[in-house]
Length: 278
Image 1 (cartoon, rainbow, N blue to C red):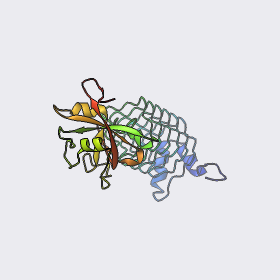
Image 2 (image 1 turned 90 degrees about the vertical axis):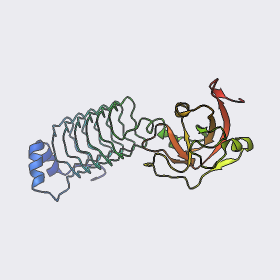
Image 3 (image 1 turned 180 degrees about the vertical axis):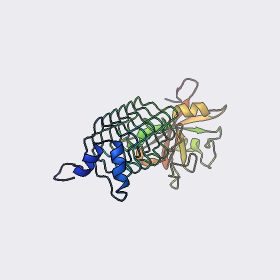
Image 4 (image 1 turned 30 degrees about the vertical axis):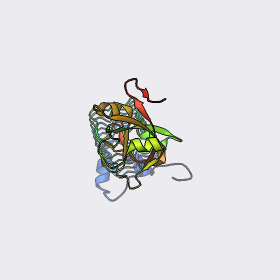
């Protein structure tokens, strides 16, 4: 940032404007130099197969840019405007896309493992076949995004499930228990007793590793998950908690997550699909 306004180095801008062939030749001669394209105006530019690994492209205007097969490994694209950009089969491993505008972007079959897409706007983006393994998607928006065969983006984890971490005040989930009142994977807690006495259920050592699908903690879920897993004699309890009580929302979650503590508030009447006892 120079004089308060993001400005790319003029030499780097001059070269990139000449297209990917000229850019790649220039980079081959300067392998130790980090590309400085901070706030660059690259709208609609053809950069297919451009070698942009490690580039500083914070705040760049890349609307409708052609970036298919581009090497963007480790590039910083925070707050970049990539609306309508074509990034098909681009390599975005470890790239930073925090706050980037990717609305309507074509990200089919791109490779973006370990990228940071915090608060990125991916509304209407095409992510079919993309590799988003271990991508940070907290606060990212995926409304109307095409996610078929997208590895690592779990529609249960992103909105609305993951947004539970941001909710203020009490919220509810559901606990599937055996006829005796224990969790379906045991654990020694009598949830029916907790319901009867009003005792708070606590597991302070709950596993916080979000790459562990099933681990120690109070495992609760959406009602859809509870009903899908229900067996004859099982009971479904409603539990109340707040965002700070969440231990982990696993990356592979299909509706289940873990809590440190909760209050068992009521038993659900599954026959009438409403709470027993009001």
